[in-house]
Image: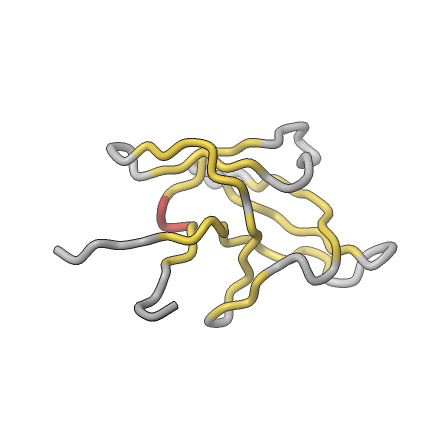
Length: 97
């Protein structure tokens, strides 16, 4: 089975692309598919293969549960700054990337 490497970027959904003061509002779904909404600076997201990714800090990896605890760059409207996300929401590193 080939090894999969992930980049510390989590898939997100852009809610408002041109917000106030050069910012945008995004939603980051956690492992239970609850969306955590936060405002980030315009240009903070990474676009890859038609998807938007938010760079995050990696806090802990739960290999058995196939999930990662990530630190968001800003506190979400929910008041949280860390969320568990499934590996499937992390960006996969491609060969040669």
